Image 1: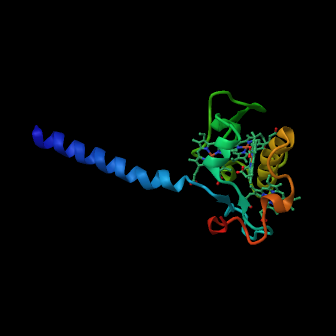
Image 2: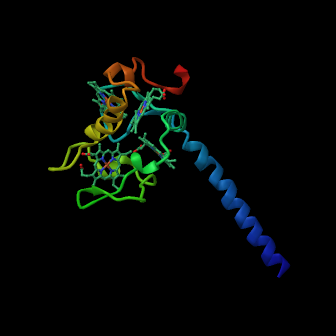
Image 3: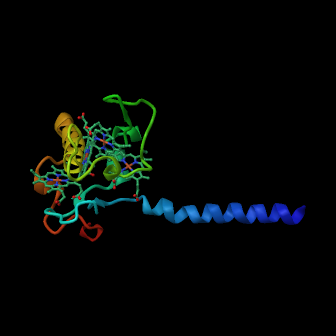
Length: 134
Ligand code: HEC
Ligand code: HEC
Ligand code: HEC
Ligand code: HEC
């Protein structure tokens, strides 16, 4: 019995430790979507957590949305999926292509709030937004 409790504890600890690198990985500092096979522009600036904190966006689904019947579904989010899982590089008819998806999501809010970059170079700085640029 004791042995069994012990091994459950070990498994729990391993699951926990395994999750740590997964959390670290979520610290996005720029966006360069591998779905674009031949990128024309350098990586876009986007420090995921810091951006959302500064911009005061609490709802993950403001970006990681779920749609049904032409509407955003309340209280559901899709952060376990990539934008490219649902938005294809070559837009399907009546659907938002991947490049437009990013541009519309990011720029519409910046324009609306009159905050955040709205020019090409403002988001895609020369040389790219690699973390080393900070
Ligand atoms: C608000 C930020 C923002 C602005 C403004 C913006 N972009 Fe982007 N753009 C992005 C993001 C984010 C992506 C997706 C990440 C990536 O680059 O792969 C992207 C992707 C792209 C792509 C597809 C990937 C590639 O490099 O081929 C192109 C082309 C592009 N942008 C060109 C432009 C041009 C031209 C302008 C100005 C008219 C512009 N962008 C303005 C954020 C922005
Ligand atoms: C301003 C828009 C925005 C908001 C708000 C936002 N995210 Fe994201 N997040 C993104 C973008 C863009 C990506 C990159 C998606 C891709 O690569 O397809 C991303 C990626 C992720 C990833 C994948 C990380 C990885 O390494 O691939 C996770 C997990 C995530 N976000 C969680 C969250 C959670 C949790 C929240 C709410 C607390 C949140 N996001 C809020 C834009 C946002
Ligand atoms: C689970 C699937 C799914 C994921 C993941 C997803 N979307 Fe969408 N998105 C949709 C659907 C469905 C629509 C509505 C049909 C369309 O416009 O393609 C939509 C619409 C949009 C629109 C158009 C909104 C409008 O008002 O016309 C933008 C912009 C957008 N998505 C950006 C993104 C970005 C950026 C990401 C990644 C952070 C993302 N989406 C992730 C499914 C998804
Ligand atoms: C719902 C609104 C909203 C969305 C969606 C959004 N932003 Fe922003 N963004 C803001 C606001 C507000 C600021 C200004 C924050 C400040 O400095 O007070 C900002 C600032 C920025 C900045 C300036 C540096 C910084 O981190 O403050 C960059 C770069 C940026 N956004 C990129 C993006 C990209 C790329 C996307 C799409 C993946 C995006 N944003 C989506 C609201 C938004």
